[in-house]
Every structure is written in C-alpha cells, then in structure tokens.
Amino acid sequence: MEVLSVEDLRVKLEGREVLKGVNFSLKKGEKVFITGPNGAGKTTFLETLMGFVPFEGEILFKGKHLKSEDDFALLRGRVGYVFQNPDDQLFAPTVEEELAFAPLVKGIKREQVKEIVERTLREFEIKHLRNKPTYKLSGGEKRIVSVACVVTMDPEVILLDEPTTGLDRNKWEKLVEFFERTGSSLVVVTHDTKLMERLGWKRYVMEDGKLCSA
Ligand SMILES: Nc1ncnc2c1ncn2[C@@H]1O[C@H](COP(=O)(O)OP(=O)(O)O)[C@@H](O)[C@H]1O
Ligand SMILES: [Mg+2]
Image (cartoon, rainbow, N blue to C red):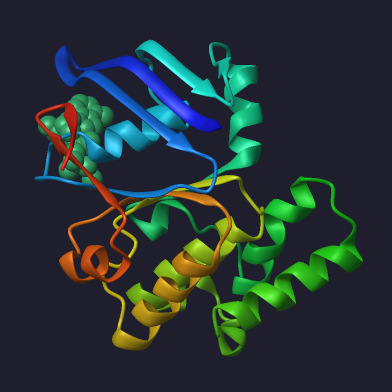
C-alpha cells in the first residue's frame, strides 16, 4: 500500500521554479534515499510534503488528497520531519523536555510519556544528555536528539534531511541501527555514500527540481 505519494508536484519560490513536476511514491515500510547536488530542491521537496510550502500538483497520504491546512495538520501528526538544521527543530529547555513535548501534545498520559522518553533515551544511548539544555549540545548530539524527538511520535513515515552530518562514528552507527530496525517508512536526503552503500536502499536523484530513480 502506498503511504505517501505525489503527482506532478510543482513549487515556485520568489518566481523561480524550484520543483518542476516531481512524481514519487513510498510504500508502507519502504525506505529510500534522495541524493543530488546542492540547490537541486531536496529540502524544498521535504518541506512541501510537510505542507510548509505552497505547491501545485497532488500530495496524497494513504490515498487521500491533501489540500487544506487541516489535512496537513493531520499529516504532521503521522509523518515526522527531521530538519536539515537541528537548531530549527530544538526549542525546549532540556533534552528530556524536548523528548516529552510531542507525546504530551498528542494527549498521551504523563506516566506513559515518561516511559516513551525513557525508552527513547535508552534506544539512542543519550541518557547522559537528559538534563542538558539543548543549546549546549554539540552538533552531533543535537542531530541525534532531533531524530529521537521525532521517534517519540511513533510516526508512520519519517522524512530526514541530511541526518548524518556532523555525527561521530558511534552516533552514526546508532542512527544506522535505528534505520534498520524501525518499522516506519523512511525518506532520507543525504550525500553520505557510506550510508547509502551500507543500507542499499533504493536511491532517487534530485537534479534541478526533477526527481529520477538512480
Ligand atoms: N525560501 C526560499 N525562497 C527562495 N528560494 C529558495 C527558498 N528556499 C530555497 N530556495 C531555492 O530553491 C532551490 C532549492 O533549494 P533547496 O531545496 O534548499 O535545495 P537542496 O536541499 O537540494 O540543496 C535553491 O536554488 C534555493 O536557493
Ligand atoms: Mg537541503
């Protein structure tokens, strides 16, 4: 079953065509890479899928055409987005509060939120960061925390924009293990050839606003 798909997606930013008729579809549980040169439109593509950018064409989530802000609000409850720059993502005073935020907003009970936070701290081996202010984290720590935050939502799909930038060997390995283990569908924008070779998923290339299978 297709979980997310787009048909002839077009985006103009400041009068320039940035996405020029993109077609794409992702099945439940499918994991794919999108690579391609800087400025090709990869980040814009992910932002458009999340409903952050006005577009022409069709975006479908589980077969439903998304049009209104309400449609995208629903999508954002089921699709997680890890920003290219973790500073755009993190805002809570501490890592623990950051991790608790999405589940609390979802209305999950405090006790259960605590369990989710503990499990996530364990899963990503970041227990030692629990009480750290997020602005004091290193670049790599910020990135792993921003992935962990999205995982607390238990999303059906996760879109990640260059998630391995700045990770040391150990955090890189943790992230790869998560990618292998998760049941969520994944779209990973990356230049990391080691990552693509290790996981061997289907690759797409974005070039000048167009998406092709590699
Ligand atoms: N808010 C914006 N306003 C105008 N142009 C933008 C904006 N965001 C991105 N662009 C332009 O759109 C193109 C694609 O950018 P982007 O999606 O960030 O590419 P990539 O992630 O592949 O490097 C670039 O030429 C960039 O300058
Ligand atoms: Mg980008």
